[in-house]
Image 1: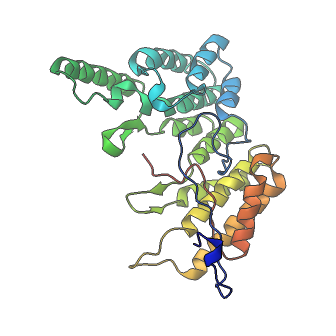
Image 2: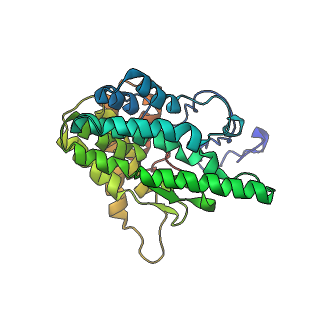
Image 3: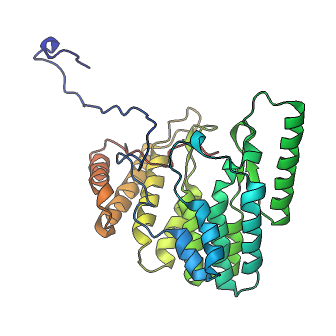
Length: 309
């Protein structure tokens, strides 16, 4: 890097100008420097809620948990899941048990989307570093009550970093069983794909086999519709991530395999570019296509390039 133009000599070697993006905390929409497959696709929770066709008041109670949160995480009011979430969720699932399978499947998907907030439950966070014995006992009681309710509702949880608990995603499989075909099945398949593949700090790589298999099957099974561009972008991201895995000393990825993955990533980026009406990401995706075709490798920042919980 040359800080002062006067120091640059005439025989400098060709260089690449890199852009350094600082991390910031800010309000509003996420940075336009990232692409997001969900940016222009239909809101899955709303589609599932409409297909479920349960009473409007109960539907709005469920969707309210997905309302955008203004401000930083630490500015939010405590989310007491035992008092706020469980009663609404229990009623919703009770109503869902009384309707036909496809609508039932869609209602389950709404619950699946809402349970994505389970990691924010105050009962799981335990953020008080100097709690008294009485406060610890009360917190343990609340935690146990929430765990029992989730067990009764057959909602799975898993432990992440630092012991925090989060929803395991097990309801999607129930939704798939209830609707082995049709619109509800397509919604459930999109719910699987929306999780996407992630960098895993435990292995310093990304394992995208399941997402790639599911995404390619989705494109084969379902006719082109408003979900198709998102699936192409999810697959492009997955192929780009596995192509970006670091070389391992024991069993390095063969260069021809890495080249194949990059070609598949570029093909799916091109398919998205041809089909998507999302103007926000078009310039970034075009730059990514150019970079892959030029042999520079993937460089785009994507929301799922973070470690799994």
